[in-house]
Amino acid sequence: MLDIQLLRTDLENVAKRLSTRRFTLDTVRFQKLVMQRGSIRTDTQKLEEARNHISKLIGQLRGAGHDPDDETIGGFFPEIQKNSDQLKEAKKRLGEIEDELQQLLEVIPNLPHDSVPEGKSEADNQEIRRWGTPRKFESNFAVKDHVAIGEDLGLLDFETAAKLSGTRFSLMQGGLARLHRALTQFMLDTHTQEHGYTETCVPYLVTAESLYGTGQLPKFEEDLFVVPHGEQGNYYLIPTSEVPLTNIVRDQIIALESLPIKLTAHTPCFRSEAGSYGKDTRGLIRQHQFDKVELVQIVHPQKSYEALEELTGHAEKILQKLELPYRVMALCTGDMGFSAAKTYDIEVWLPAQNVYREISSCSNCEAFQARRMKARFRNEKGRPELLHTLNGSGLAVGRTLVAVLENCQNADGSVSIPEALQPYMGGLDRLAAQGKE
RNA sequence: GGAGAGAUGGCCGAGUGGUCGAAGGCGCUCCCCUGCUAAGGGAGUAUAGGCUCAAAAGGCUUAUCGAGGGUUCGAAUCCCUCUCUCUCCGCCA
Image (cartoon, rainbow, N blue to C red):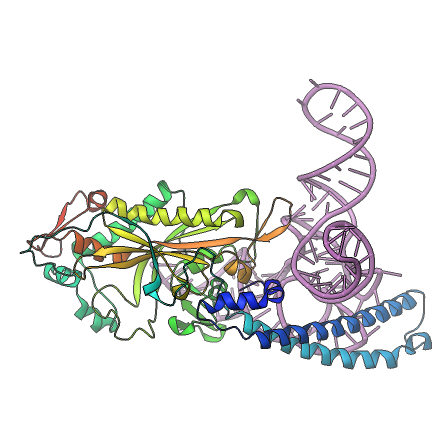
């Protein structure tokens, strides 16, 4: 959510910046609502003030021994009656206007940071840096994609997964399942032991309120899996552990000394992928369920851009250790997510398709989520102030597995295991077709 | 799932219809006294809005005692619904 004060004082400029994100702000409607709210609120408060005043007088008279039927008290009655009717009406209207304003505000995306390149789509994203050199395969090397590699090893099975759950699910077994687990452990260990994050085990089902806090609701409900829960309402399967991790500080005032808060969690993520029909239908790239190790930082507002660079570096570190080539992209205004003020995507090299493919997305949401969540800290002056929140994948486990399979494949169909992962694989240095262990 | 108890400010805790945004304590901040490691005295100490003010300070004002609704001139206090926490029983990884 944007600061309503900012909208009030600098509306045209805000609308202009939002338009670079392909969002049209109805400034006329906004202004009309704010003005209506202002005048109705003043009326309401004046009526309340009058009511409080009379009630206090009655209280004093009663304290002084006057009877309720006494005409000193009874004399107030006509005035009270009138006030009461007017107040009821004013409160009702105020509530309506406030709801309408709220609905308008909660679907406005975050403002892009000044450093974000302007652009309409993915094509306008800006490459920041590259790391590593894509491997050169011999001309007679038949480069396979991860689906072929996994299926030829007999360890990856989409057909059975489809029988169990339908499309966009996968089944991994044996060494491949272990490799998937190894990647997860390796990522968590790196972030906790080398980057200072606190490992956190979180709920996979969350309430609508939590999703509202991080910005997935109310606008993107169709992307989520909903789990009905009787009369209590619905649960939602988390689309990312950013949701539970960030909501930890919802409705909290954090002590200055506790900052920054750095959290990591490994969870499955669930996405309905509505609107992506026909896109990435092959393989592990786009699934309804995938594992991810997430990084979240809750920081002092003055440190959030520093933290974004740091957090992105933490995600990059994983790829460096795995020796997988990648590039870092600054997303343009038109390609950024709803809550982000600035986002870096990390794209890993996938030789089978000859492309760099998104494997991590690191965003600074500034106070956008914090305002929705009422997540604050006590600043240097002892005043509560909104925090800044950041999140990033560190990394998407399934896509990392894809990258390892494709980049480390051998001519004989086996896959070499990156050195960094070998300790997590019981010392094993290659995955070969020899059954399912 | 059944039975019961509870939810008050940073924390503890009082408050069952009226001058209560809330006693008291702890903690914290400032001042004074004293001076050697411990103590005494005083003042202050919620959040979000609105109005006023050139701005800051200040002043006025509204809301908030788990959430929402109701009764009432007036609700922390009474009624209803919900949420959460604790205890016991049942079930269960």
